[in-house]
Image (cartoon, rainbow, N blue to C red):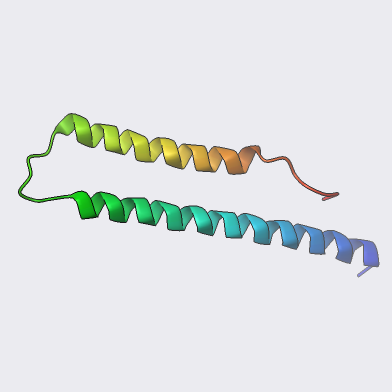
Length: 79
């Protein structure tokens, strides 16, 4: 394998590692949010359907925001 190809592949692998790290950070954040919501859940408490829809919409918007920010990032470097 030529030196140029190896350098290119190393750059790609570095970027993939950074993307994977960012995805893992988002996964941890989402897990923490889920735990908070479950911790606040009281089975004896009356549940308002509008509040549930609001919480669901919030989670979906956070997920969309995270995915969109990953997809819209400009590539770095020559690769």
